[in-house]
Length: 168
Image 1: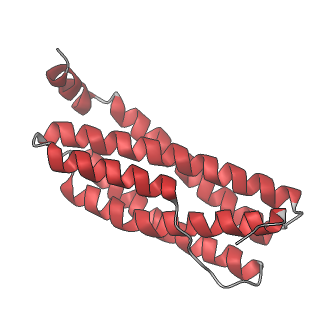
Image 2: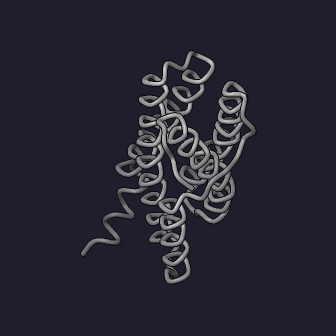
């Protein structure tokens, strides 16, 4: 399939982000269940619920474009998830697994922030109105907040002892 316009590229990227958000609902649920750190688990549960709303917002964007919502594979997300699952299988220490989850969450949030920045830029260039731009901006704001929360956890007191235990 060839793409010949910015609008087609925008729809392609939007469909990839739709896939990303749908896949992350399940991944966040898995990590919330498997994380042994209560704050981390609660954070994944909260963000899973936000992600469900993000899926709905993307569906709203498709509707504003008068297109059916469609999902397209995201090789980047698939690779990140494959790496997380590989590490999950290899690690037996709960605290170390929590660190993998924290890192996976931060990496994914950065990836999503970039995706929403890219979509917002394209939407602006295409002259799309608030019905397209506002949902994307709301999703971006939530991704940014989730990243800040994960980043704060990285240095929080309950994880500080973990860092001390895991570093020589």
